[in-house]
Image 1 (cartoon, rainbow, N blue to C red):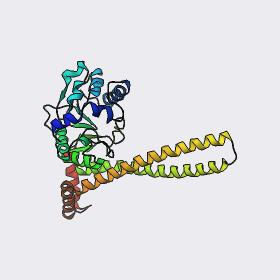
Image 2 (cartoon, rainbow, N blue to C red):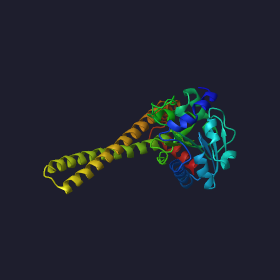
Image 3 (cartoon, one colour):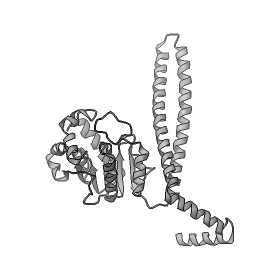
Image 4 (spheres, helix red, strand yellow):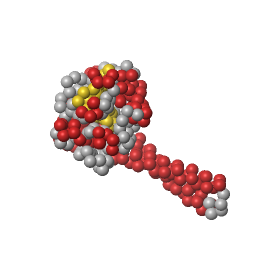
Length: 312
């Protein structure tokens, strides 16, 4: 799909029928993006922001209301034509598959790349990474029903593409105020060992949380079964407790599913890191160092002493 074709696809019909609910200037959509703008200002503190795929500019509006120098870019002529008149100087028609003309403190890209062909999506990620050191990113990993979703990918695919540009997920930042599957990718100059340590730390926490949730689900299931057996004797209190237990079980199962997905994503990213050339070179260098300077040897102590002096 060419840029011109995309401009025609994302027309009045698309925005009326393909966004879950009609995408228009109303309280629900403005409130949603206003909440995202508030979290961005509170937790990231950017001075300049590009909303890559801004549609009608609701996020740009929310950011500018908070004093952020925000801009928007979208391939849809229809969407840009419906930007609020006060924001038209800051939003324009264009594609992130083309190089961006300037740099930003933060680029936000929400539910955009799944609409782009695979090659264009790869170029888009390279362009985003060339124009910032911080990307707040979201792309649905499972919505195949939408006719314009040409490039639906699991999270690890996007993580690998960002890693090829030197960007890794900020595992300590929670971007779920955008979507449950969103991520914050930041430019990293850390060695693979440090990146791996951070991923392993997060993996362990998610594994522990997931294990505890599974145990809790089992406990809730047992309590629910007991309550239902007791419910053979009618009584509003038993019925109320049974309903509360059932709702709690459903919440635990939903949280469990999210943690499993996150754990699998981290596992895939760890495998990508270990399969990379940088990791293999680092592992080879470590093996060579151990051969030349075994742990506890005079050479090992000398090397460690030099490294401490360099760091200090």
